Length: 211
Image 1 (cartoon, rainbow, N blue to C red):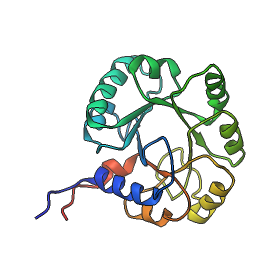
Image 2: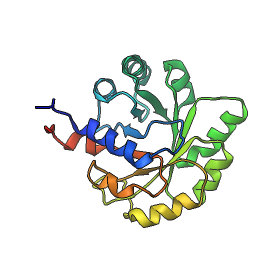
Image 3: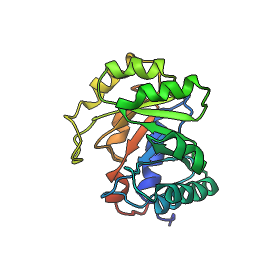
Image 4: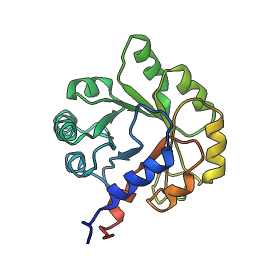
C-alpha cells in the first residue's frame, strides 16, 4: 500500500498539473493563512509539501514579526516559499521571499519596485482593471477571485472557469485562481493559461486519504 497523502499534497499535484509548463516565479500552489480557518502559519509551514507557497496574512497582529520569522525558518528547511501580506518591512525583516499586496496597495508595490526592491510580489485582483495596474507596478503574479462558490465571508459571486479564462487573456502576468478551489475542481482549470491556484479552507477541510 502506498503511504497516505493529505489535502496539501493532492492540491500541490493538481496545481502543478494546472500550470503545465508556464513560467512563473511563484510556486503553483499558494496557501493563504486566515485567523479563523488557518490561524497557525508556523504549523502550516511545517505541513506544506516542498515546492508550495505560504502567504502569511497577519492582519496587524502584535507578534507578527516573531511568527513570520519562525514560519520562514521552517519553510526554508522544507523548500516552501513564504510571502507576507501588505508589509514590505516585515517581509525583509523575517527573510520572507516576498509580499502579497491587497488590491488597494498595488501602487505601493509599484513604488517599492521603482526603488529597486526585487522580492517576489503578488497582489489580489477583484476587477479586470486591476490587471493593468498590477502589470505597470511590476508584479510577479495576481490572485483573481472568486472563481468557484466559496463560504468565505469576503467571497464575491463565483465567476467560473470561462470568465477566469477571459481575465487571463487580458494580461501577460501570471494569474492564480482563488476562491472555492479544492483538489477536485482545480483540474477544471487546466488549459486556461493560469499559473496556479491559491486556497485557504481546502487545506483544512479535506481529511487525509489513502491511495
